[in-house]
Length: 194
Image 1 (cartoon, rainbow, N blue to C red):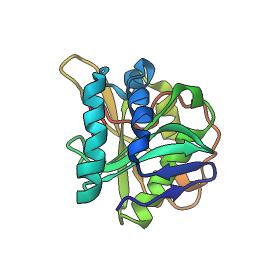
Image 2: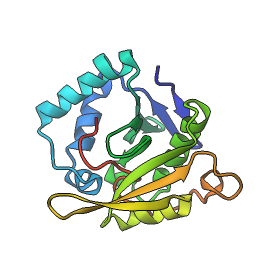
Image 3: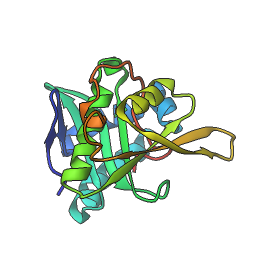
Image 4: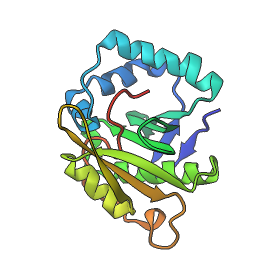
């Protein structure tokens, strides 16, 4: 079962049926999709994806996925999951544009790293960040991610594959400054949110 997580300001809450409209609105936002490296998905398809989280992902424990909440406000989405993009688990975050530049992206990633180490027993995690997403790449550098390689899509777009130890020790991700000017998705997967 995906656990509830907490950081200093964020509440990672497994999705509930009443969160569907929040999820759809976030992933129908053109700026969010741009920085996640994905096309706008039709609303009915996103609603199907959301329902699959509730009826397939959670019951079968395929991977962990949450809505991110700040106080009572939905501010974004987060996942830790094995994907075909990397040989391991990928961290995926997306924040609503109104919450960019507040240090929440770094806080969300640090929460995911702690969960990956403490609850999943992972020694490292990956992020896929579009080469043009300079704010998220700067965030990754501050947190201690290391560039592994560039992934070039058929259309010529470049995604940076990044890796980080989940338990970086002193001065690593756990000790990184929580302030930052991240925009768009923090460490984000290019493609479908599931």
